[in-house]
Picture (cartoon, helix red, strand yellow):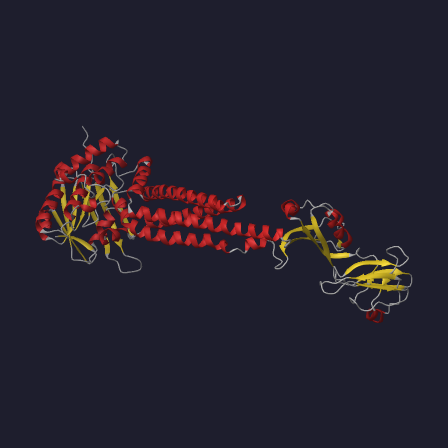
Length: 362
Length: 218
């Protein structure tokens, strides 16, 4: 017999609804896999969003600004410091470059600027001189580098911890500073070259500022710096990295394998049916069309159940839109993957050279 | 008036083996014409007679050789063969009526016409009373008659029966075999029966024996 296409499609449709337990198993398995994939993804994303919100509220997230690739100069640390003067920004700081940078401080003497931990130097003020007129030199470093230059200044040395109070040291010309921080401090500090700039923002402006709307980025360096996403203070991981490392990245793979296993089982039951169609003189393409139509009908039912279940879940859990979108994307991806798997299995079933055995074995 | 040539099913140097195993069919040449006659293929178990039937019915592609089907035009079929198996003869969840009507529906006949044709087919094999019963609730003999009814409705020129008495008791076998031979009444068919039942073979016009992969006349 030669199936008309419409008749073959109708046959598949009838098979789907007369399949009994087999159809129910397929629908249950498909809908379970689809909804599991979607909900696992949306729950994971929602968890990240909640975590991000909490951390942002607690100032737990900071924005990192780095020089653009190829920028050998680095960031302007003082410009980084000035970012904190903007509204919605809680604070800013910088990590100065650790490499030695030559600095001509005064005629005849070479002074080298070393790294200074951000936050350790609260302010440097030259006594009787405007800012930028001299350097403060640590004692050991003076010997090490043979530096005798030193300007009279008041150096307020802060502390990274809360225990020790800031120390104010007043230096006379030529006087060497005790090695409070083993550094040579240029009076130009906080102006200097920074490796990175950190910005902590108010939660209310979190998303806006994450998108790079902080004013003054352009002043940080000669070329436009790179604004990286917010990272957690503790782990240093950004939301994007956390998203990539989420466990649900693998859920849809597991779900797809589940569909594959289930489908293989169903195809074993379907084998004798396919064989009977072939015995009825149907071509492989006709058998494929019938089985495909049956699958699509069952898939449509399963997808409807899965989507309704997901919507119900999202409503009662008040899920954010980005998490829902990720869930929908995950469900769509799984559905497509499952469908391709099914097509492959149906192709194998109708192409079997052992169909006659299926008719004899039953 | 030109006489229309009868449908013919021919095997040309057909040999077959599964995988890299030994050949179970070796260079078979045979031709079957839908002229109201019947052929029994008699052979012991495991000799390859079901495989031969599978090749005739298009379910198995021969390893070498060709299967030629000629003059099937207008018979609404790809292979021209209807099957009657030992057990798997119907879609279990469909009714007997639906199982027969399926061939008419596939050809694009309207639902009503297909149902009427199926009812006539079931009546001709004495199954009118179980037409609406799900196939999974029918006995083996009834299922075989459903397959025969389907062959009648599909107007298949060749009916391939694989051990039709294999799982039936004597009285049911008689009913099924009678129904099978009834299909030849229209004179446009050829019944090919694979059997080891000598009484069935005796009713056929021609008895062939499959031995050592070769088909020989009895």
